[in-house]
Length: 300
Ligand code: RIB
Ligand code: CA
Image (tube, rainbow, N blue to C red; front, side, top):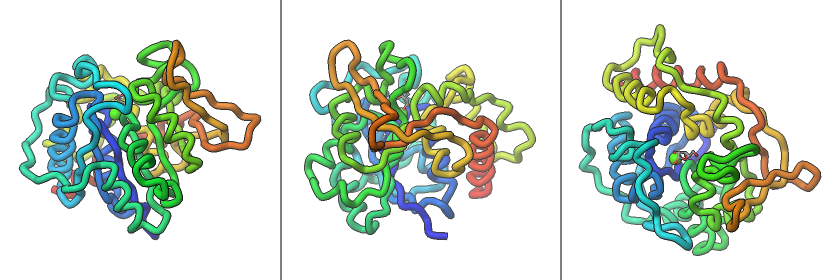
């Protein structure tokens, strides 16, 4: 089977950790070409360091990490979101430090260079603010013809988590999200209306012969989040198990400012530019998480 070339654009991030776990584990499904980093949950220095350390934990130091922007398109980053991601961005869990160097390219150039090598098949998985993607499309206008799909954790078809309307990733850089959604590239949007339905509980480990180190870190993160959903993991699971997420075709656009800043509006009576997640099969998603744990444990 031909593997799917992917780049994960991320701000690790407690739930980003689980997204990266899945990307790292499915080596037979994903040609994992790079991680690109953005701030938001923390500074870009911190999220980049976290990405390096997480890949080390998963024995995937073959995956390059390219550092991204230090601000949103039109605003500075806010304070680190310690309540949801800990002071260090990953739930105050101390990972073994990676001394690996970051990629010499910045995130937006890395996306472009990898896209050129992938013959139109590259899938971008974006689980943080979409600043790097927007910068890449602005700087390299021909990039939009080189991307097969963008899988987005972001938005919501009901309520947000920063404001009534805005989900964090799209709210933080709504201008960037608007640019991304207007590229014409097929988008799968997995928003809070769906991810909220699937808590990740510690009983996910029941009956698994898991690597102790990985298990300990994951359990700490699950506890840190009080067993709430790991949104970013759900988004990438849709690429692993098509039974996990139920999508509906929609024309989706993003409101960039005002009271409804960051809101994702899905309309079903227009030619679609996207598929929006409308439901999740929790058991199919949990199969992906359990399989990920087993696969990563087999790297021991
Ligand atoms: O709204 C959920 C998103 O915001 C996730 O990507 C999480 O990591 C946070 O940054
Ligand atoms: Ca994230």
